[in-house]
Image (cartoon, rainbow, N blue to C red; front, side):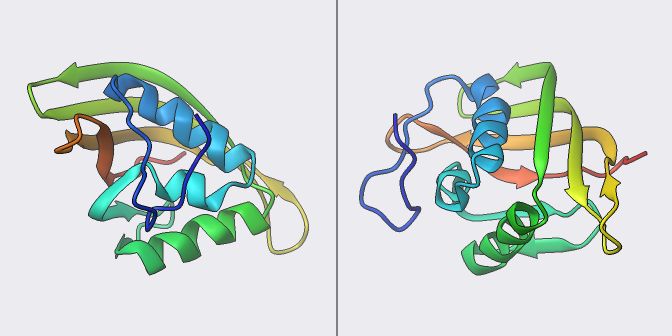
Length: 135
């Protein structure tokens, strides 16, 4: 499935919410900002690694675009997926390598508790990413 823009009338249909962290990782590592954004539900939000809370497609686009510009390379390892009828909690260990302000390569790590919901189309999308707990 090719990633699509979140404003497109077609959006990815992810049938297993446990796949979302790896799809996020793969799209980010490919530099595909639209592909990452297509994994978010309308009105979704996230807490950045720095602890800032952001909501809305423009803020998410800026954050993801900045990570891509810093040559971000994400590794996600799923720890738990607790799936209900229409809501899922996805616990994932992550490492995000990025270029630091002085050109050094930084690699913060942590564990994230993400929330996903099943949409009217049956597809799962992130409603909240929360990567705090960085080391």
